Amino acid sequence: MSPQVTARFPAPVVAAFDRAATELGRSRADVIRLAVENYLEDFDDLSVAIDRLGDPNDAVLDWSQVRRELLDTD
Image 1 (cartoon, rainbow, N blue to C red):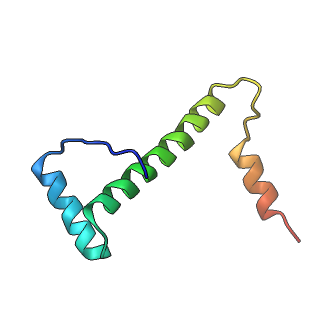
Image 2 (spheres, rainbow, N blue to C red):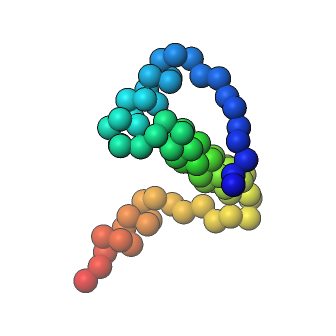
């Protein structure tokens, strides 16, 4: 069984969870779990992107050159 976590949300957020649960045919807990999982995936992606932007060894592409190369196909 998964560990249980308790959190408090403002009433409008709970109402939004309930609306989403109704529309999706899921439970409130499912909607909250999916929302948190999606948030954490986005957070991980953003963390990787920020790390790469700060890496001086990571190549930077010139958009004009890339565009020319993409459009200059036979």
